[in-house]
Image 1: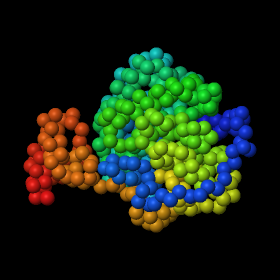
Image 2: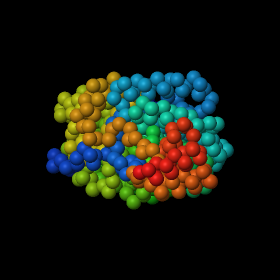
Image 3: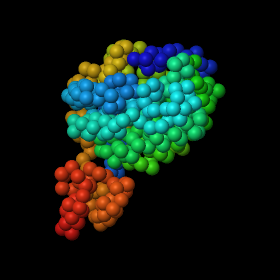
Length: 428
């Protein structure tokens, strides 16, 4: 809730910027020629994945995976995922640390302390919920933090993960790395969002829109943070990496792409009605943004009937989905299952998401199944996988697809899988 209130305030600030919006009215653009089979982000196994879903985005702000209270929290989380699955949700955007009030752990709360690690069993619980989501035919898009981390009106502050290189390194080494090491091969992870809506804490001198309650950073500083995070995630994880941009405005809609050249695997912008007259993906194609990677709409207003745009106001989510698919976008995720401030999307996806999915069987919306024995995710099972499993059994830090390595499907990876994989390859 607090996030959406902040976004509304910042939207007002956007309208009083020096940019003359009358000079940037969106116009109809010829649609892309993207086909269903090529639509979506580039996922593991050389596959495409179309993100059809919603933001969760938390049960207990920044504290979802803490061991304290997990026995009571986990059944609630599973029940929510059950509900989401029943309403056509296949992709779930989930915030991990938020503003870092509860996690990860720091030596002090004044912004001067280094990060020392994660609360007990944090990664274990993330694995539990990821595996459960996957069993319900969903993938989770994890968002590490948000612009909220730089809020300087709290009695705690951890915005120094962005502009202090030593503290940033401690955060990446001791909080981010254990997570991506633990889930980097998990097929239940859709991708990794480094930071939510960072443009709200980028200085106005660099064309950001700082909200007055947060420490503003230069664009160069924020890009440096994003690059270090992306490099770490790519080192340990096979899933794609992005940044949850606050608007198409910063992804080529008004300014050149803020996040180009940082090693991101797809782009993600958010669409609320304040942006509709100027940055409308129903009128502006993905191709016209001149991006070098696929792009999704990672947050979307849930109640189209409240739009001030007559076209949008009269549409269903299925109709909007058809429009953004035609215009070359690779995903659509509503805000939010847990919002209580008028932006709640529970009940807004049915029957539209299921109907859209049924009309587009060639889209990879369902979970992409792991190929048993394909340890290196090259869509083949051959001697390279055999040697990789051998190396893994000698050294468990070897990077493999652990789901594919469980060849005999007994929940373990051992010499029995090695022998069975050998037989599979010989008999192929």
